[in-house]
Length: 296
Ligand SMILES: Cc1cc2nc3c(=O)[nH]c(=O)nc-3n(C[C@H](O)[C@H](O)[C@H](O)COP(=O)(O)O)c2cc1C
Image (cartoon, protein in one colour):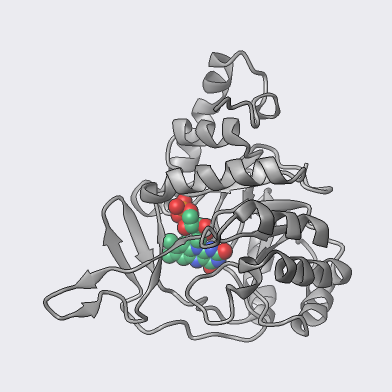
């Protein structure tokens, strides 16, 4: 349970890697998913960063999309009506520029029907100003408590691995009133073309995702698990049932699949099919029985 939010199963899809879900219709049985987190929306439209915006690296993907989106009003009018018919939980991912935007978001989201929860993305590494809230426990607490006051929806806070101790930031989110922590967003990185002496991305640095970041994500999940009582949605390099099980025993109550969609679009369905047998191997009836049972 994430506040009053409960999923039919613990396999969800991560923001920015599954479009607005309609792109995956016919590939994935969308109603089987535990939940969908569409691309992050901002209050006003954003054109995103200059291309190239993605580059493949060893076991990973480096991106600098820059929160390209058409803004909250457009999302609520054109994307939400489709999403809410899918028979799964819809968690709206939002990014705020400052605390002043919180009441506006609260009002607009409150008026919209069909939202099950909000994921506050304070951790996008490709947007100036976007990451500040996730780098400091106090700033994190401040923005979360501001947002908590203006929305009745279950509130997840998405954290960045690009900090000293992510457990401390998670404590800030918990004190601010978060119902759960989503972790991790991408790891700040750089890919270089030495012949041109240039970054391979138009915007310089980017965020690394995919299998390369799984050990970092697991380390973060463990630190968060030790620091807070609220549940964790684990993210980072998950493609297989073994990846998902690693996250559960480390401390995640549910997981989100991200970059794997780009090379294995049905990864979520494969994980779901294999989950009962994997749990049975540990003598467990459900995921709750194994969350955080790792011994180090
Ligand atoms: C192309 C791309 C776009 C992304 N866009 C967003 C976004 O809009 N909002 C967000 O919170 N995370 C975004 N992410 C981060 C993912 O949701 C996820 O946290 C991260 O990629 C780590 O998981 P993964 O290794 O399974 O991809 C994006 C990731 C990628 C690769």
